[in-house]
Picture 1 (cartoon, rainbow, N blue to C red):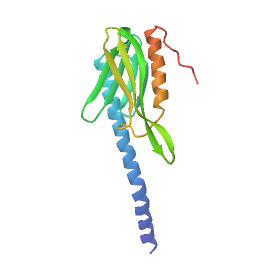
Picture 2 (picture 1 turned 90 degrees about the horizontal axis):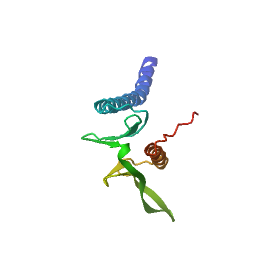
Picture 3 (picture 1 turned 135 degrees about the vertical axis):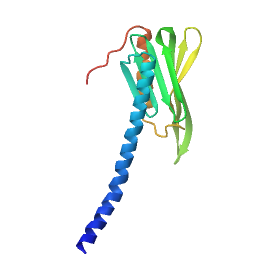
Picture 4 (picture 1 turned 60 degrees about the horizontal axis):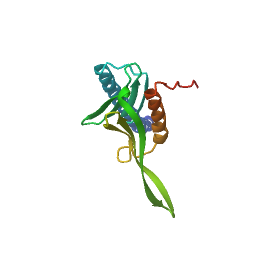
Length: 167
């Protein structure tokens, strides 16, 4: 009777911890694939990224020597890669789209989309999508993130890179 109780306990514990372990390994595998793909893109474009950030399927980085901005979204079927020459940029503008949602007797403004518009000196523009509610259900400091990158990129077009303060 004691051996059968031990076996049942081990099976029960295994049924809880084995899926957790497998999901953790699968997540690490996806992150490794993303990192490898980013390294391929950086190498292909001969970039030396000094400042970068990655969240979800999106990554952004700056090469201060070549004055290039790399913005990448890696989807399962395709990759959206935008390489912007910062010396050709006229200005940056944050585009924020919100909708009003009624929840329990009050109205709330929910962020639907957050983009950084890059206007070039020749009149062309790029739209860098930082957040879309359909891709990223949860909002996680996207407004702070885009404001940080907007300030950082503006400093690069003014030839005065912002130095990050040590914590």
